[in-house]
Image (cartoon, rainbow, N blue to C red):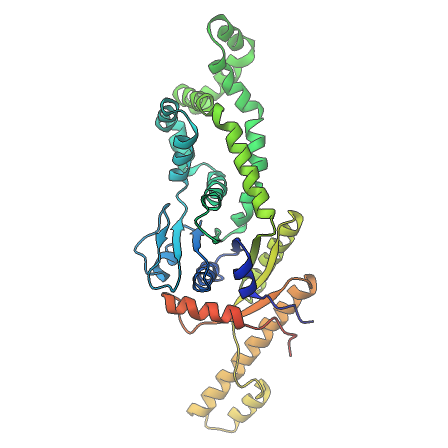
Length: 374
């Protein structure tokens, strides 16, 4: 069974947002960068945003560093910026933008906020939603390419609106807000009706000062909660828009293609627009007409230490590897027959500059769909 071919150039010319997701070690960051370079050189104002803290994207684009501010990539025949998500700076920007100056300074100085904005579970995914929404709302770009973290949590940002709503509407937040909302006798009444029991238990676990920081933080942030929820939902809706295209990246390996299946199924469940699958680092042979069996048989008739015998054995190994990769892709296509696929050949070395990214982009554009194994 042959898969339909993924028309990468059509995606680059029509999409407003491309989200690259996949397992670690499959060349996802390189794929995102190559798409961004090719999109920019096809005339679109492009920015590539990485949520992966690795520095590969900056290095491949000739930048000394990436941070929360888009930086122009030199040497591209077009307009291309690159940036890396800094979740704390993004959170700080939200506070400064959406809170009164005095309230904003109170939030920024709060010890609990400082911990939350730097390392709290789920903050990175939510801030990725915020930054994507900011980039889209700026109107500065025709195309935004997002490089997600190299794990299954790459799609955790899809849960951000629901997670945020659950947190904001949760009992813990309501309890923490109670002392800040109450005053005088009312405050004492709240404390004596069970709140002291709850806070007493928490105090033993995390300490009184930390509990006070948490309560003050939640109270200070309360006026911003509605805006958080609305923006998260707006960005979630943006991801479901036809102008968005999810590209799943995998290597022709069992575990990577299994992860790709998970991403495809999750995106279908969320009704997100899937463009297709990029199978990266595929091994090809220019002499496929010479089968592995014939190549090995010919090598047997030669001096085993000769260069010709070595080349024949290497050719046979490459063909067998290519056939094994094709069989693995066939399993994926059998499970997901409607998913467009494009193959990208394995590069002779690491991609570390713009020329390498252009070569990958060319292969993405002209690469073949997954074929039935021989």
